[in-house]
Structure formats: structure tokens, C-alpha cells
Length: 411
Image (cartoon, rainbow, N blue to C red; front, side, top):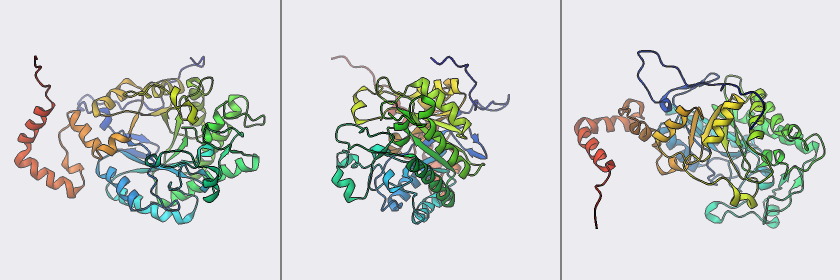
């Protein structure tokens, strides 16, 4: 446990007036700087490997656009590379070129047209750059494949991410300065594209994580050694991005609360990092875990419902920051419990939303809110409202019957 004094979270759950109904926290608005999220449901970044030279395609318009129809409070893009060398996979989204702005702006405009909010996750994969998509095996590019695509793996030290990964080129001070500028330039392009939020990806073993970890970072200069030095690059990126990002718009940062390796980055370290990120201008800490290297997958935190929520709760309480919980959050009651417990201010869903893009609307029903078809896209809501006028009681009875436990049988 940290011996530093605990601080109150920066964002307390909204207080209700005496005559205000007991509305679920999940569907209460949250103000972050000048941006007001209509609810606390965030669509988590999910790699799609569908871009063309970093440019968004029709796939992204449909993939991200459907979540706006589904009623999420905020949608986040997949990790969007700040340089060609920072791609997780060859077909990642990118913002290293002005040519990538307009295709993303098309997606942003559609989401805004449906009344939604959208953010971009800026990423540099570092020593884990260059891998095949999950449905292609997910394995690392060979050196020949890296060379064929003009890609380089970069890291704090010449330490590979694990078996099958080549040794990265260790960044010198000029290379570090160039990476920071890549994030700054990508942020300017995010402004041009019209995004509401920027999220920095400092987790899952990518460039920032590798600088934070004493296992991956063996430097002896100002960027290595003590924790304060290992945090220097991520904090420099955060401060530089904050300077480029409009003051009225919030800045998120995803971290790995524990990186999945023994004797490496841990939760005490993450509390300290969260405090420092807040001082650098970060508004929300998005709490994930694991991913330092392929070798550590087998000793990461056991998976289960809400398996990372406890990390978000401790960081929120001890660092006094707004947190976003992520990881096997599957339904509205579970999400509501997370918020009411004080573990987080926002919940992020990913694969549950892939299975049901209307997850937020289902969650509202599960939490007892009446259908609000006026809040749906008009081309859907009008038809559903008309259906409910005629068939609403029958459909509700049908749903209750399906949810009722089956009577036990004796063999």
C-alpha cells in the first residue's frame, strides 16, 4: 500500500435533489471540462485492422457509427498510430499524415450527426509494433516482414517483448524528442478532424509502458532508473498533448495498472503515475492491465467479471482522479454497481458492445428505465414507438417470461 495520504476523487457522483428521481448513475451525465457526457457508457478502443495506409474506411464508419445509434455516452476509436513505426498492425488507423484527417472527420461528422460524442486513442506500439490480426494468428512480424513494410520496433532499451519478437532499436534523446512531436502533430490532426476527446494509450506493453517498466527499461540516463525517470517520457507526451489539445476538451489516458510481470510495474506505481498524469493535464485515467510482453500472458490477472475494477477503485481513491473501469463489464446492473461502489466514474465496454451495439439501451431497460424512443435515432425510434403503442404489453410480458428462472426438474 502507498504511504502517501489518500485524496478524494476528483469527480464525485452527482448529487440528487430531494425531488429528483433515483436515476441510475450509469445514465446520469458527467461533465469533463466543457464536455458533458450524456451517460457513463464508453465504447472501448478495439483494433479492427481495416484501415488503408492509416486512413479510415467504410468499415470504420459502420463499426463506430453503429455505437452512436446504440446510445453510448462516448465512443473511442481503436489505437490510432502517431507514426508508421507505431502501428500495432499494418492496417491500423493513423494520424501521422494530413491525408488521414478527412476520412476520420467523415466518421466524426456521422457520430456528431446522431448526437454522439467520439474520441481518438493515440498510440505508439513501440517494441510491440508489427503483428498480424487476431484472425490471422496474432503473431509478431518477422524482421523480413518489418523490412518489407518499412517498419521499425522502438523501445527504451534493446530488450525484446518476448519469443518471436525482434530486439527493438533503443531510442536516443533525438528519437525521444521525435516521438513526443509525433504525438503533438497527431493531436493537431485530431483537432482538425473534430474529435471531442483524445485518449493516450500508455498500457498493454506499448511504447509508454516499456519506458515505465524496469524490466523493459534498462537505461542509465534521465529516462531510466528510478520510477520518476521512467515516467519522464509518458509525462512529457501527456504535457505536450495537453498543450496542443483545446483546454475545453478532456484528455484521457489508458494505463496498465499492473503490467503482468513479477517484480515490475505495480499498483503503487500506477497510483503515483495517475497523480502525475493529472498534474500534466489528464482528466480521466482509463484503467486496464497487463501486456508488457508475450511471455507474461500466463501470469496476468485471472480473468473474470469486472476483473480490473478493483484497480480503478484504488487509483480513484488514492490518487484522487476520475477513473474509467474496463474489462468484462457485461450488463447494466453490473455497470451500475461499479459506479455506486465508487470504483469508477465511467465504464467502458468492448466485446459486449460488439455483440450488441445497442448495449446502452438494453442496459437502461435492465435498470428499470422506461423505453425512451425519443432519445433513439428518429429513423429507428419512431417505428419502435409505433410498435410499442400496439404491442408493448405483449412484448414486455414475453421478455419477463424469458427472463424468469426455469422451474427445477427432478430426474
